[in-house]
Length: 192
Figure 1 (cartoon, rainbow, N blue to C red):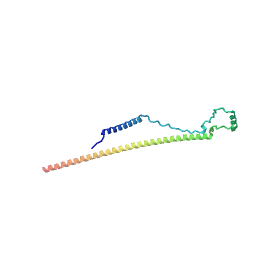
Figure 2 (figure 1 turned 90 degrees about the vertical axis):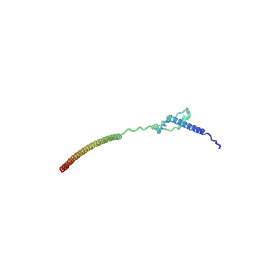
Figure 3 (figure 1 turned 30 degrees about the vertical axis):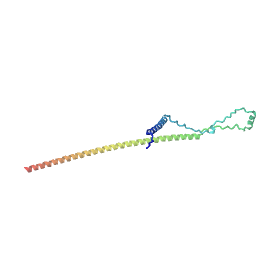
Figure 4 (figure 1 turned 180 degrees about the vertical axis):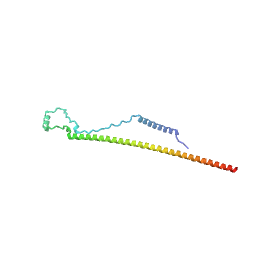
């Protein structure tokens, strides 16, 4: 049999070098990404609505000197403008009337009353909370006193029960000793 196999270590060397190269590139890329500054956030664009009244009137600048014929033509073609009417004057707000002033004053008073009512309501709520806390504290103290009293009564009952049992035991022992003594006396008399 003819074996035409290349030694396996050459293929392993190529595979290892490829793998190491790919990993080296990946690590360098990750380090570059990790150490670089993060991209800046894009600035927000704000849009502003411009009214035609806010724009300044266009200024016509003539580059060339007009001729006499053009001046005459402009004079002939220009419309007749009534100079007594003001052109696009901004309307000044009229001074507030007495009724408007009274309405504003009433609104201010209502706001003040609402503010006072809100403060009063908050104070009442705080007083209720304080009273509830005090009530709860008193109830807790009463519960503790009742528990202490119950424990003292239970302890006194237990002590009385122990005392009664001790007396019964002592009485039973005395009775048992008396019986034993009586039986011993009876045996001695019977023997004698």
